[in-house]
Image (cartoon, rainbow, N blue to C red; front, side, top):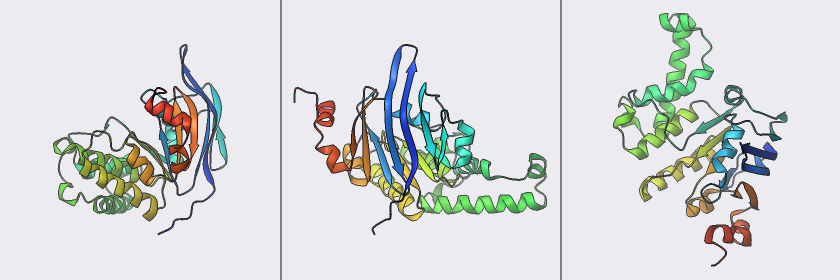
Length: 260
């Protein structure tokens, strides 16, 4: 099935970020088009997670701007970013380990809950109807991610690969337009990686969600990405289709070392 990639939805321009005297990112520019899978790759310490942290408002860059759907920001505020439709998963799972799968995914609906806390606590009228609608949306995500058997299980009791799936589910519960995935396949075995690849592609194709992905597994990146941006030591050294990036001499040197 061929998908239609749209206009630029997210435009990163001349982003520079320093911590003290250490430059994490230097003058980075790239864009993300609607409905694409856009990968950010690079060796360890290249600045990939720092880049995501600038996009979703965790870090405030010293220079540059980020434009989302035509609105420009020098610094994105985390809560506002989420409200605008950008969701994020993290490299280190930040799930509530003692809570069930369904309750963890429900936390992703918080931004969409309209009724006040008092009405929610009493579960009266509109609040009860609203909660039922949110639970229905969460059940749909649980079915989509094939974790029905674990709905009531505390997340801490699940194997790592399934915890990663719950983390993805919580981000999907926000109904994002852009989904930022920070190494969604780190620490997984081959079978778990294949499953996660399938879910990422399904999210992209069935929900129409734009995906920005950091991933170390080059095979995965080349298989599922539409375009790839390559960072090294906080600088951009390559940008293009997987084939273009694969043949880029700077990228080959960064990954293999110039002696190869």
